[in-house]
Image (tube, rainbow, N blue to C red; front, side, top):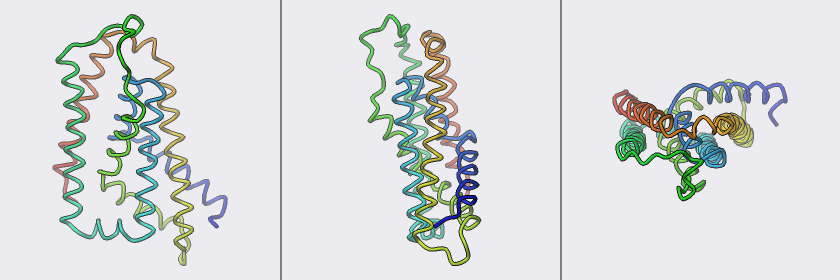
Length: 210
């Protein structure tokens, strides 16, 4: 078992890491704006599942193989970059179409489905091999020298919990500001900004070396 103090320290580090601006942050923010708190929490849950999958992959050595293979790492990185650009372009297209109306008046507008939001969060995280690199560097700091696979899986559960906590909090905060986001001009401006950020992140990821 992981000692309580170690588990608490790891949880804090994971939450602080999740709070740093990046693709996951942008996806949850935009999802919460377009689909509400439920969709934002679903996107956060998808991201958390991706984190769990990466840490489990590390426990069984899969992630180490990925990061050791320049070709595999590059393929996953480029697919992830393309997905971020795709999400950004979708936001741009929404701005270009100009299909914005005040949410209070648009009863017929269907919000983003929670299932679709979950998949966006999951794919954004799974297609980012930098997450594997991050946890490959982080986990040894919290495991004993003779750490077992079971202890690594314990940390995977803690990492998942920390990720869910942060992104659920983010979705709730954005959801609490829904009155502000009802305005069509605000929605259009945010889609333009967040779409640009997603495209920029995608291009940055694609340009980075492993």
